Length: 130
Image (cartoon, rainbow, N blue to C red; front, side, top):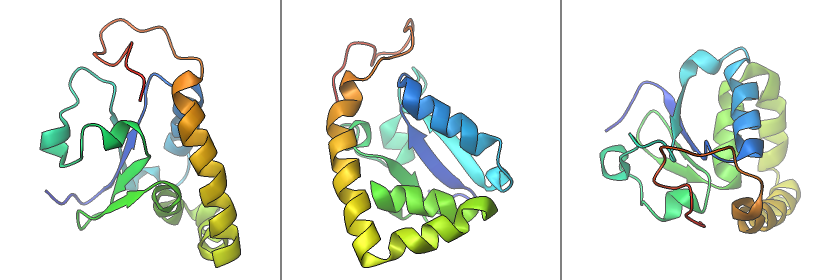
């Protein structure tokens, strides 16, 4: 299902992740983004067309054509939509920079489940370790 918006799948229980998403929401260009909390009780991975396990391990962004961008490429896709970050996206595409970002993201993705979470009540993912 293709959307006119770029869809960002994020971990709403992760404090750091939520802080970054809230920063994006306030930026010029955010109207082109759709934010989906993968820890919401309403989240349906099948309806969204994403793997239910993988989406909890790696950042996912779906573009307007329905193509998935994962990890660092997901962030680059977000930055493309936000005028203030387009130069960052261009820089991040350069091979040496991209490789460093991928290495850093791989470390972050491994420790993210260990980061402090928001208080949790209704999410089926409260106790799940990605």
